[in-house]
Length: 252
Image 1 (cartoon, rainbow, N blue to C red):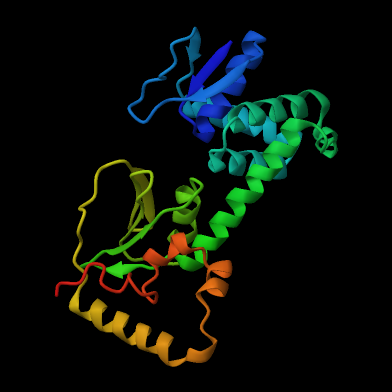
Image 2 (tube, rainbow, N blue to C red):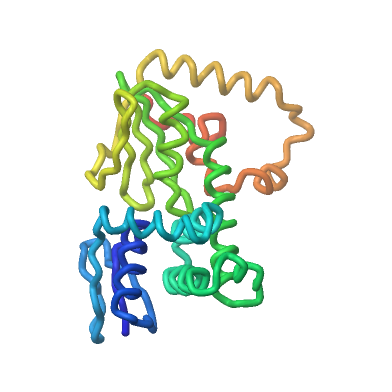
């Protein structure tokens, strides 16, 4: 049996409940395509997220497995690695049947896959926590970025408690954004303007930051290769202090 769901945590919890209720053993678990269709020609079963059911299922699982493994499973799904959905389902199913002690069996393919994927998402999350650069575009702080893993919800929660202003975190690769205002945030797939203009004050602040960045560097010791070891080149386009990113959103 092939199951298809939306790739969210609520979707996975709904799927776990559905398969447990039906005594089903998935051969594969796929995600809906961006337009909402399964894209699967073979016989498959679609599972739509049920937030209430998902919350109840997660509460029961956490009570039995502990918060750590629920967190690992959630992070693993965010990695979007091939086959991770089935691995997470198998991991949670085994832990439910055998108890949290089964987590010690790291030789089990599903356990190893979940832990590897979770570590990847965790590293990506912490990388962008330090690399997000907000720009003032006129009453709203806007930060574009393109993470490898779907860590937008976690980053939104991180900045919610640290930046009370109106802001937008834009995952340009997935075409999704987190909008924050008055202490609350929500996700949207709505298209954002392709070209947002930064304010004059923002231009001045960026110029000062770039000058500080240049003046504190020792020219003879600058090494792009070493910089890329700590800051992957894919992130440079979103860093105000890096060459090439400075002209983003300028009016001139």
